[in-house]
Image 1 (spheres, rainbow, N blue to C red):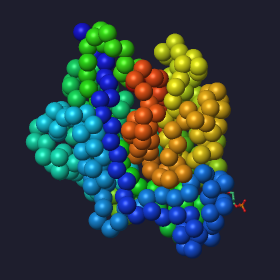
Image 2: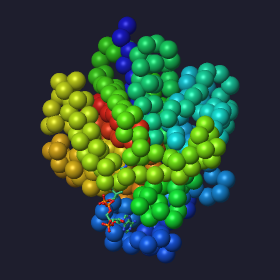
Image 3: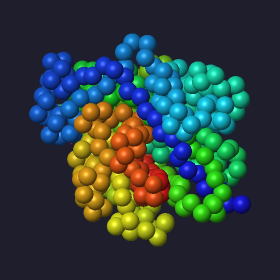
Image 4: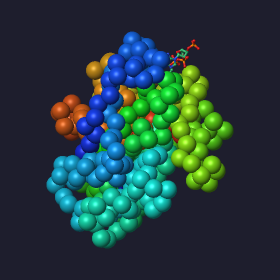
Length: 323
Ligand code: UT7
């Protein structure tokens, strides 16, 4: 029996604390005008002391489980994408497993920075289709604020904290409902790891390090790679740009979102945008945006949704879904 995986619930959670561009301009040499013009970001959420990735992930997970109408008892596996784990080890996923009171199954983290959610979704989809699991909780959660150099205006204005989650379930592909994950495509090019990286780590400096980015270089690759993965996803499913209903992209920069939408011939109101309020929340940005558009009713059954992301590694990829 062929199996297809479907998203049966979405959830998200943001820290309460808001930092506006105006507030940032009092700390570093920047302005609301520069940040808004160059990125579309107006404000971001930042976790308070003690508010860790697992705490944000737990809230998002509970919301996704509620939306799916199940409890953690109904989950076989937890896959959590993060670049800012609570500890170097054990995985933050195992912490969330314990917090959810889930005493069966297994949990693990995935590290693909801003592409982490797409990577996690792809792994989960493959596991379900292979019959290794029936239901998987897929989470993207970050406290990127903890690895920012708050004196570096070229990076600290760009990021925010948050978490999003989906529950994925396997169904008989021939059950008459043609919804589900149609395809995922993953890519990486390790030669480009030095244009977006953290200058520390447990195995090198023994410190956590800070996020460093050659913004203009990353921007250039993002525009090219994101358009390419979109075309790749459509071609793999014999679909055309006209078939797309929604773009739910990783939220790094409004200019990148506008550029991708234009290349795909999508209007601005077919792109789910949260970057203005969330900034770049790395692995959390896609499930945060997805949850918003599902809950406010924009995303409807039967529609075709393209999710795509690019991040450190470089890593990039797509997931095409019929809702
Ligand atoms: O999520 C992973 C993927 N990440 C991305 O996709 C991010 C991709 N990159 C970007 O979004 C953009 O490149 C940035 C928003 C990071 C930068 O925008 P840009 O238009 O590429 O600006 P730039 O780096 O070329 O810098 C232009 C100027 C520079 O000054 P000079 O050298 O022209 O005098 C910067 O020093 O803007 C200056 N600058 C700032 N000025 C005010 C850089 N950051 C700031 C700032 N406030 N915060």
